[in-house]
Length: 338
Image 1 (cartoon, helix red, strand yellow):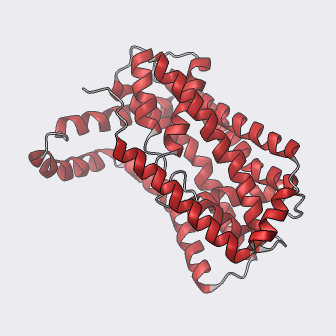
Image 2: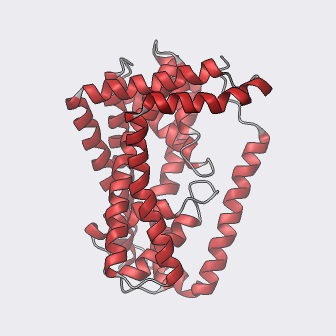
Image 3: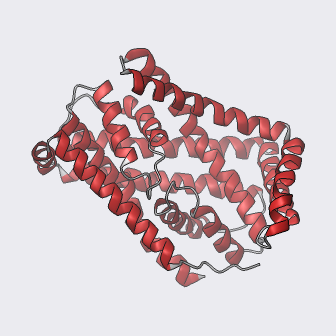
């Protein structure tokens, strides 16, 4: 198996183009909302609260890394938590620069684990995906609660209301589908392999045996964590705690700019809901997440579009750009180590 991590020039250009387009969109939106008001609001930022928000993001990533650590230990993959945290930060960087996210970090961390431990790449990848799904559980539950409250308490325009109902269906439906896929795993396995066989006949990059092996590894990893109830509870607890610290920077962004009406309970479901709405084909959902936050903040708090955009931008500095920089530094260290 080829375990190299090539970064081709075309991929780099796509990432840079994604950032550029998102930046242009945000500039256009800021101009429409009142660029001068956005600039004036940002000029009054209290940098102490900005630092607190960045610290919250750091704690979030450490807690999510701990959830991964618990799952990996159950899977028999022995790696120190200190080393894993650095690898997790690096994986976060890979995810955050990948359009649509959640596509670059998992293979990266599986590659690193297969180098650092005696586990195979397939075993590492299955355990990493299992841990990632556990970390997504709070995302879907908080999103479902938040969107339900939004639909119940706010009078949204017709198009926005339809979008909110669609996102609510996704937030509830995806966990249900995952549960069904686990319950009827043999049927799912057979269906996936039937779809893969025609593809495997026309390309050597995909093999039926390889896909079957990865599916089996994934189900085995799920089975191990499901049987160890204590480890499952601990991992889920770390995942939920991580999501709290992922959401709190939005509250700290409000404090940074002195904007009232953004309380800690509100951000617990506004942030997951905005992340779900921000599934745009740009690195880290840049542009989509900010616009979704603006729509939610304007609907739920007494702020103008310009102030809401200012809060969203500060939140993204805390939760995305800070993590991108720290994760990038970690990635350099991990690649040098491997």
